[in-house]
Amino acid sequence: MNTILQHDLNDLENILEKAKQQGIDFLNNLENIPTSNTNRIDPKRNLNELGLGSEKALKEFNERLAPLLVSSPGPRYWGFVTGGSTPASIVGDWLATVYDQNAQSINSQGGNSALIEFETINLLLQLLELPDSFLGGFVTGATMSNFTNLAVARQWFGKQLGKDFAKNGISETINILTATPHSSSIKSLSMLGIGSQNYTVVKTIEGNREAIDIADLELKIKELNGKPFILISSAGTVNTADFDDFEAISNLKEKYNFWWHIDAAFGGFAAVSEKYKHFVKGWENADSITIDCHKWLNVPYESAFYLIKKDHVNLQIETFQNSNAPYLGNPLENFNYLNVLPENSRRLRALPVWFSLVAYGKEGFCDIIEKSISLALHFGNALIEEGSFELLAPIRLNNVCFTLKGDENQDKVGEFLAKLNDTGTVFMTPTFYQNRKGIRASFVNWRTTEEDIKIVLEEMKQLI
Ligand SMILES: *Cc1c(COP(=O)(O)O)cnc(C)c1O
Image (cartoon, rainbow, N blue to C red; front, side, top):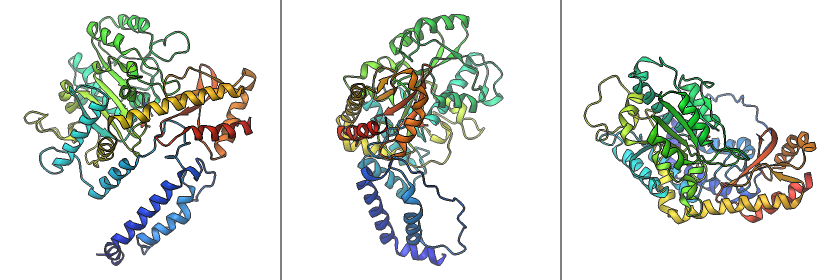
């Protein structure tokens, strides 16, 4: 063994203790760490001939890199849809690294890690009140979850025409209908060889809505003359957190032959609250669902899962099977994750979620969800009261989409947001909604309080 490695091994306890202390210092100081940083490193460091050892590497990290990292798990990072990490989720994430399992088969090597993943998916189904007719697994994010789900949908589509796209490639035009798809679904269409432009846009409901217009959907279905199609629907659009009508879509599913996919990256967590679960009523009838954990479940990156109906497991295996050998026996009994999703080797990504759900239970998450929504409403009301802002859409859930009041101020929106983000007090995302420039604040972090909203409003008033 290299002497430096040997030294690190002998010094393991001290090194991990220092890393732990560093983590504690960062987490305890989150509120004071800026949400943005304009300093940039020159990323051209030379590789040492002789290693420094972990302790000195940590020292260099501390001096050069750590000061540039932003408070994205902190309470005022409202850009994109960014969750933080709860204590239990950090424990799970650290231990997933330490135990370093390869979560694949439920039988031989890594056997119990795949079963821990099964158990975690099962806990999630209980949290979201979804039936166990879904089979799920963990991937890095909602983008990869959409990719996985739509890959199986693609295989399903081929089957309807007697083709095996996984084996022979795509030989038919795949019909896709959608109203307000997330950009990651479009990216998935590109990655899947379907083509990022090859989908039909269905109208949204009249008025200030991003949800699909069911009448127009049915019209577009009829234009397909009985051909199969894939429907990409939304449980929570990013700008205005709008939901498609899943009961109406369930009814259409009785009449027409289609694969129903729901992107519920963050909006799916509406199911956790008695007050908001009506938004997802009927979603259990979907063929596949995408949900992110590194957003509203507040676990560290990278964590999301897909859900696909067990009935489709053979299509899933045809899509992702790791060898050309025919599958032996019952795919559910000889289950191996490497045959049902993109990755082969994979970490025990379920563990942070397992810890979170066991530690905080249904009530803990219901609390986070309802608190986030009430903070969004509070922020929206405060913006209106302030007088210089207007909402671009009603606040349905946890996202606030707003702009500077008056069309004459449209040119100032970008500059205002840039200045606000540069303060490092808060971070929000620019957006474009119904032909107007806007700003989006998304409430997902378990640490955010009313005090944070007060701090941000003060900062906004200074800049207006
Ligand atoms: C965030 C988001 C995604 C993409 O998720 P990643 O975790 O960033 O890959 C997809 N769909 C919706 C609705 C989202 O909000």
